[in-house]
Length: 180
Image (cartoon, rainbow, N blue to C red; front, side, top):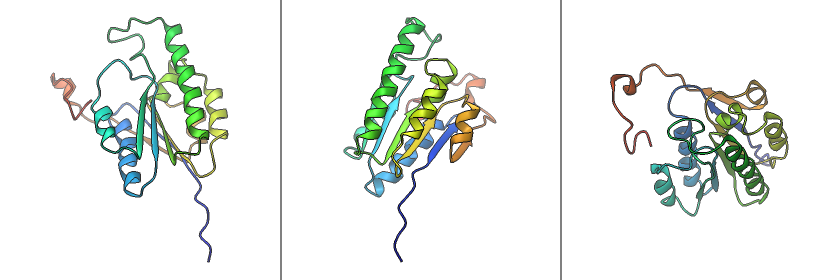
């Protein structure tokens, strides 16, 4: 009996709880164990130093990561006009399309894309068209809170992270290696 060709999935990790990017990175770790190639494009993150940047280097050459954002939009000392955020998000989407169509990767992670959509940096219609161009066997993982209902409908798997309890509410600040 012939083995059927793998159909790639569209996976969405969303919700207000922690763990969306971490879940996507967990898939990278698992995929590396099977010698699959993953690439991560971060749409919002860009101005802070995140632990995953150095951690991913240890999974090289199977995993690559690209920070394309200017940092969080409208908060945490954002010094950029929204038009600048829109410009880099649009460029990040085109960069992601090139990666997706290159044939070099099995998994494409679009980190914080849901947030970029909800902040109106990227139009949801552009993302739905993007997904239509996905190679048949590629898996695409989209992270970030506030996933658009149309994306949820299009996805094969959606997980919502729900916050039950968070140490921040007791005054515990973000910790290296756990939160970033």
